[in-house]
Length: 115
Picture (cartoon, rainbow, N blue to C red):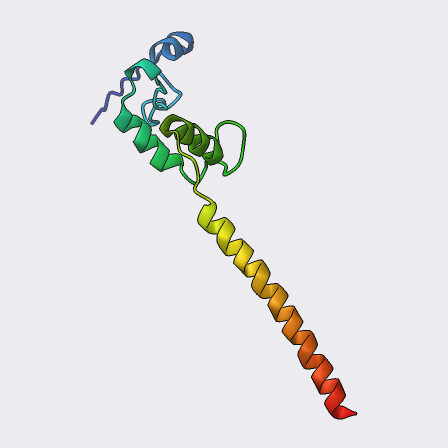
């Protein structure tokens, strides 16, 4: 019994130019990054703000939470009402002074009592 084998041979240079051997079909191409500010919506802004909230620095002249608060405050004509806070701070200072006076009186009385 005779068996005939046929062998097909390709030209090496033509094979490389015809067949992609870089496995690019197995790898997903990187997503295209495209952002057009003119097409962005308010919803886009708030979605990105939520996404980057913890990446945004707290302090800074620009690109920070401080910047956003300052700009929004200026737009709203927001002025912090510190009158209550100032009154409480003054009361705390007074109470601290009275406490110090009482501590000195107690110390003087205890020293007089031990003599």
